[in-house]
Length: 633
Image 1 (cartoon, rainbow, N blue to C red):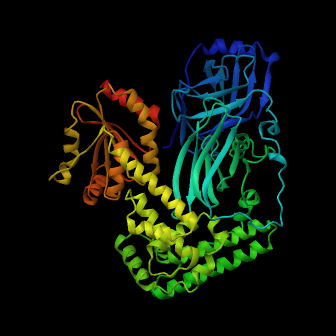
Image 2 (cartoon, rainbow, N blue to C red):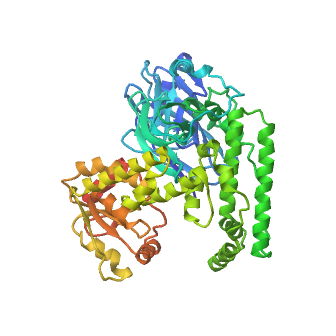
Image 3 (tube, rainbow, N blue to C red):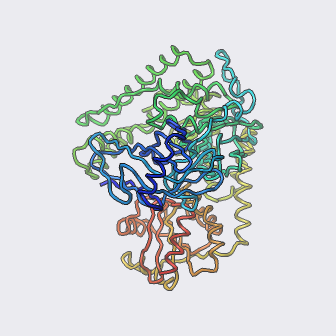
């Protein structure tokens, strides 16, 4: 059964607390449906807070599946904005440390009792405390009136107007530096302190994300080099909100997260409460498109289609093509008939045009996926055979229109899928392209080489010299950056490359572990292209420095799906013991150690026993805690 565990700290006597609470009913201050700025669990909410001179009472509402259970254990606390900690006294309608099963309705209500709060407290957190990273928390439970939103936002943010008649007027194909800045409104110490920024490179699509640390006031700033106006996603986990915005060379894009509204939208208790404004506010390039994007995407509806796989591959591909063109026709009509601004209409029409090309290029895979989903039983041989038939039948003339005419326009460059289209065309060399699109495809092939940590050769540099100035500047800047890394890596120490040697798959893991017996070992399965893996490496650097005098060895295992040149250039910045397995060895580990995704972490004690395992980065605090625990075994 599902186990949702919330933990509290036990104090005082139940009967004494009841007497204290009953004696001060007349002086109660009651906050109905308090605003909670963050809630990373969603299954537990606070419907009322009662404040007295001797007690604090939280009326709780829990939601879960019937016949599953939750448990209120004994170490959670309330912590106010002054740093005061208030342990739980007792519960009413629930017994602490005992499994409580959800009824058929899936809803339970109960009360939790705490000591009285500091009268000057403005908010409290209901959590395990700051020492537990990524633990359950209902945070920013407001005890006072909210500050007006207009006082938190820069002047003019609430009064921006959209010009419905203005077309897209951005210059998309320019190389330069762009800036993203903003703020998490209502931010306070103890909330998640990073935003994730994902940029979309017009040469490859999604270029991965970076963590940007928030300042004490919740503000952040990040600078990046871009090849023209581009999509950027800014995500803040504290309110699970993703802002899809634009950046442009020599311009600043601003985004402000309204976590009070994000929390309200995710709350059952506040389902009928009036909105607290927008989830985020934006000021920057293509402002009208950002403002209207959510509504615009609602027009792109499609019904799931089940194809008849008794037809020939040629018939299936033709039916799939007609289906996609029907969707594009329907969406185009809906966009033209909408009340969207002229700029947004131009952007959406370009987006669906790029989407159509990608759907047709990927027709064999999309049809195979449909076949896979609708099989009564999963049969890998059948699935692979169907894909092979479809791929063979999908001839080079399957896309019967001029790609260059369709996508050699500024609007296409803005779309998030344009980089993916360019990368796909760069791989499919038999598809003809012209004009700027052809230059982008050529640039994408050179970009991929550089990103594999292979600096450009002279003949490749000559190709770049004949490109437009923006492409030339962009590729040369990336090449200079990679060349600089290679030079710096020659001076780096603290890592070691290990060969697996002539040893069977069955004995390989034991062989790796035996080399480090007597020490605690952290094994990290990763890949060069895995953003969370690389982010985990960066996050753990301070921890590794702090634990440098401990008997801990860090072992990093990658596979052949990590390009060798890139792997060799990345590992000097990852102190530890490095292994690069063959495909066969990696697949064997996948089966025997259940490594199905990355990053995947194992902690071994001094005898080589696995004492901790986590698929996905658990956070620095948790990793450090488990390493220290293993040292004590």
